[in-house]
Image (cartoon, rainbow, N blue to C red):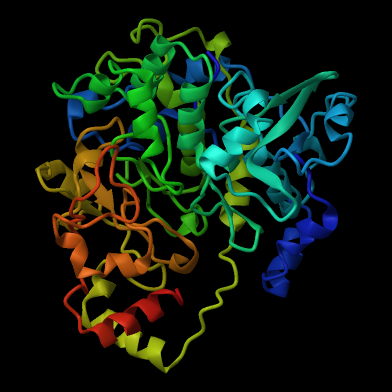
Length: 507
C-alpha cells in the first residue's frame, strides 16, 4: 500500500529570515546546542484517549497496533525541485533534472540546534508521501490542466503545491500528498505562505483527470469509496456517489472551491475548509470535528502519522479504507511511515509558523468594532488572546453523551451550521470545534464547509434566504440555497457591521 493521503533545502539567508520576527533572546536560544526529547508517536497509553469517538460510536476507528506501526518502513526524503507552469520553465530545466543524482536531505545526525530541527521540519513539510500517481508528471506539464483549474502560481511561475523528485538518476516523478499540497497559500502578490489555509485547486485537478484522461470508471468509484466511504451509515452519501459515473464524481469535485480540501475520511459533498496550521500550538482539538486531541507535541506527531497513512488502514466497524476488499489490513511492509525524527522536526516547524504581517492597522473604526465584538458576546466563543475558547459545540441532531461532558470541553450550544460533515463522514464526531479567528484577513473561504467566500458574506443577512447564491461551496448542480447558522452580528446596523468587520480583519 502506498499511502493515499494530506524538497528543496532553503538557502541559509532565507532560512534565517523566517526567524527575524522573533525576540532576540528567542533567536539566540534557537542557535544553542539542542538535544531533543522525542516522544514515541505510536504510544498505546497516549493513543488510548487521543481520539474522540465518532457520532456513530461503534464505527470509531480501531487503529493498528504499535507492533504493526513500527514494522512499516520509514520514509526516505529526497531533495526535490520546483514545478514550473508550462511556458515559465527555465530553458533546459527538464533535461537538467534528468541529470541529477538522487540526494537524501533529511539526516537527524546533522541537526545540532533547535533552528536546525525547524529547518529540517520544513523539508518534511515539503516532502511527498506518494510518488506513484496521485499527482503525475503528465498533469504537471499539461498547460490545459493549469487553465482548467485556474492554478495559482508564484511570481516566478512555480506551482507550489507539489514538487519534482529524483529517486534515481534519469527518473523524475511528481511528489504528492505532502503537507505542502493542502497547507500552502499563494498570496495575491505571488508570495507563498506555508501552513496557511491553502488555495490549491486540487479537487479540480482530479476532476480534470477524470474528464480528459483515460481513467477507468471503477478506479474513480473506488477512489471515492476508499477516500470517503462510511458504509455503516444506512444512507451514506459517499457510498451512493461511489456508484455513479466518473463524470458525476468530477462534477462533485469541480464544485469544491479552493480553500476546501479533498482529504481522506472527509467529504466531497460537504467538503471541509482547509485548516490553518499557523498558531496550531494554541489549539486543543484538531480538525473541524475536533476528532483528535492536541495536548503536546507528541499528539501533533500522531496527527500527522494518522493523516498521512495510518487512518486509511484503521478499521471502522469492519471497514478498512485501504484494505483488500475494504476488509483486510495490508501487510506492514507494503506501507510507509515518517520516522520519529521526521515527525518531531515537522512538528517543530509547524509550531514555529507565524502569521504574516497584517496590513490592517488599528483605527477609531476598529476600536469601535472591538467594543461591538465584546458587546455581542463574541468573546464567549472566540476568546482572546487565542480567539477561541478551545471547546466543542454539538451540531443539530446530535445528543451529547453524558460521559463526554466529563472528558471533553463541551460548549453545549449549537450554532446551527450544516451538520452533515459532523454526522455523515469518517471524521464526524457530532461536534464542530470553535475555530480561532486569528489571521482572518488572509484566509477564506469561511465556515467549516467554505460556503462563504468573504467575511462580508458571513455577516450578510441575505445568506439566510433560500434564493441566496452562496459565494463559496454550494454543491454540484446547486444554484441557490440558504447558508444558515452562526447568525451572530447579522442584525447589527450597517455602520456597526462595518466596524466589527474592520476589527476582525486586524486579528
